[in-house]
Image (cartoon, rainbow, N blue to C red):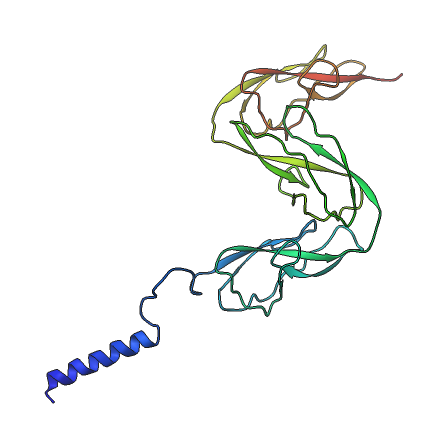
Length: 270
């Protein structure tokens, strides 16, 4: 056999070995384990840190965080692939889901008939304010009020805190064993419109008297007025009455026009 034929034969053998061992380019789509994926941990009413972890398809999940519940009677029993039912995932489980995915905390909840009241904070200047609901600790929240998105703001759901916090859905188990408030979260559509807010101290004094705010963002820091023989109880969208919406630094600016906020006062009892 000539040297040329020997070289061609060796080259063919190397190419064949290269393809058989899978060292060549992969065919078809999907994550074959070379790209990490993100697992998000949903504590289902509890708290957990960290909230995410990178894992690799084909390998084990490795150490998983242990969440805590605000209710000392609840016992964490593991992470599952679904909020209810689903497959239990441990640190030795093999990652087979090729997409970013969520694991849900499962709690062993003692039988209880304790009921608590849940109130809702819209965090905007709109009405009506949803009525409170009564829920049972250890059961799901059930139907929650749905707020209407606008051209300016998209309603993202109810959360346990004004900023961040855990998202609460109808399937979330009630783990907070006392009356509590859920806060609306809004995602502003892209806007840079600014409006001027005028502060009417209603017989008192305030500085500054105006402020520029951005529609879709929070009002931010608000001035504190003063008035003889009165103490300040907050800013509202109307001069008097309960229909006026109270505005705080965390309230979302939804009024697209220049507008006025009115100081509310309570007279000192002498």
